[in-house]
Image 1 (cartoon, helix red, strand yellow):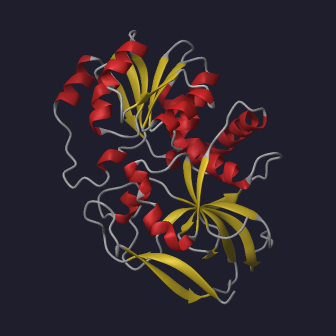
Image 2 (cartoon, one colour):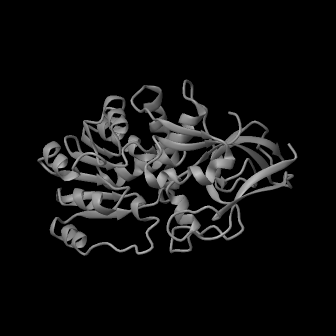
Image 3 (cartoon, helix red, strand yellow):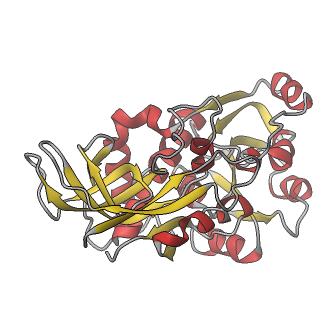
Length: 336
């Protein structure tokens, strides 16, 4: 291999990601200098936050610069090393580029454990950023208690499927919201959710009234918009809302919320906390250890939606914003 391929940000999207916002380029294969190594990317993680990184709006880390490689979660093996303690074949995961080979000094990357009986896609797709997002968002912010009712939007996505299962492990009633019968059947029959509402064919409000007449204690929010408003209207007093994402509004140029939402939060004395998973980075080991145990004992299952070909990544990522993915969306960049 003499070249590497990388998607670069050509311009900032206005509204939805459009053709031409990202460009697929070919460059000479990098050679590691002192303290550097080259990572062969096996899987690229596509996540809703990709759209935020492409913008110049206020955000939790610097936006991707025009002309720079598109940022993304990656896992892969070391292809060449000029860094002490890093050996060819070592497995790493963390933040990198949408590329097949990455030159790095290791910043933002960490060793990824290889778990018996767990595929690399399952391990990376769960223990990378998705699992800690679900783990800390629900346990540290949601603070679930046995017998409480949790609603999870985007329930069949990477984060949602983990949130629901942790909720069940903690003794809660879990109601998912997802788009389509197949996704709803999956989270109920395979993952053990108590129920799931298909927002495409069912009235979310009526179904919540039927499934949770007692009200909702925790709303793990990933979607925003009308679905969030509907759940908010059914929150109990002193309910908790871990605010993980607002995917329905990432392509929205307006970005305003109706004032009624704030009134509802006040009157029900809700606790709403936005969070970014990197807030908890010093504790990632804690989450990985407990979730790995759950995975190896069958208490935690995850589904990955794996698409082949780095060259298709700019088109594939659009599925995140239309509900076209089923499970954690990964791109297989090179063979595992």
